[in-house]
Image 1 (cartoon, rainbow, N blue to C red):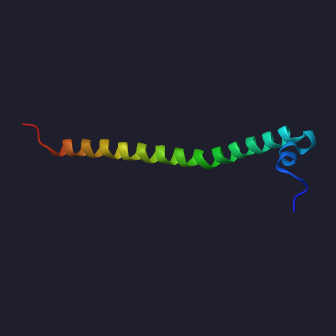
Image 2: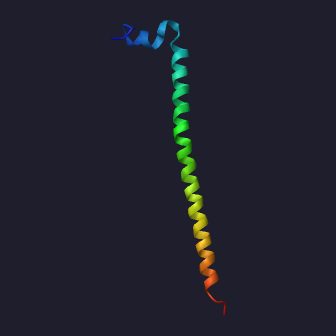
Length: 68
């Protein structure tokens, strides 16, 4: 099955465990960041476009009304 006899040995990895698990953690954080960052940027961009469209629509509706 595994090269290690117990979960404790798997965690420790003959003294190299902290380095190995730290690398796994850093890699997982980097992958999550690379997946989430574009999604957040996309959402911000769509919000900005919606806001700009509302401003332009409000400006056009004001321009259509005659001033008395």
